[in-house]
Image (cartoon, rainbow, N blue to C red):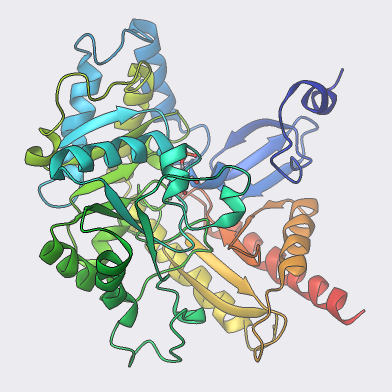
Length: 432
Ligand SMILES: Cc1ncc(COP(=O)(O)O)c(C=O)c1O
């Protein structure tokens, strides 16, 4: 029986339209190879995870060395040196006074834990989140996710959650044409939503500094500064969900650094260990110390091998200035696609930070109708031609370019040329 038949008969896959027809064998840097030796440029990094590249020697060596010593002891029952070392490192690299870390296994588990901590610290129980957001697949994280496509069939969700409009200038939900003159109305709405839709018991506002699954939405400059001021006035904590935007992806180690704002809690996963499963949240000491005996734990959280990989991952990022590389490479790639817009009417907007890039496809500039079928076509065409990309947005019309940050210039040329050609083919489809 082949792997595709095994998946069909023995793996639960009903929740995805399809598994991409690639049987993965191995990876190297920004390349993946299938079992027949076909090579792909990987511009999705396993949903934005392998930021330091596939098969990164330094990270693998660190993980192997740790596996030789101990794979699991439970990092919350015994002291494990590498867990302490990683926590100290994270305190050094996270913004401001963030200091104490809880280690989990995934992004959803990190967000759940951060929500629990926010409740404990404030004594309040309600949450504010953003429409079009995504925070995970567990009950609480789906409850603060603003995307019905991800929530359908799972309700009713947690009470005490209110959603504030998406800071999405290309399709402003408040109807403004110009994000220069709107006075950051979307930020001001945070205060109104907190006051009018909740009962005065809001403990935290949870937001992605760059929204990933929602279609690589970059809030306008000033949004998070204005929101943080409102949150401080209302006694609400700010949890920055850096699960997707963290670890160099946007050109800084953490995307919130672009905005000059210090969150009260940061959550992370994905790029934290270059593919080894690990999630985490980090808080200022006075917040972290709110946990009381029995409040929290995780059997696998802080797995020593994942922590060793994470430590080596962070050291690698600092040694080669991976965030700086992502910033420069991303600027160049976005400039090329913006230039292409002159000849390519399918592109409505090119946006992003660093190598977290979204290309929003539209049917025409007047209606800005979602070019969903075209985006799916482009993804499939790219795959057939040796390039792996993602698709996102509430209506599946945003191409997502999120490669390993070690991607080189020649590979970026391939990304641009292949996507550009796929867009031409997709355009023909529309006119047939
Ligand atoms: C911003 C954000 N938060 C949380 C999650 C959930 O992470 P995980 O799938 O590791 O639970 C994701 C996953 O895509 C994400 O993008």
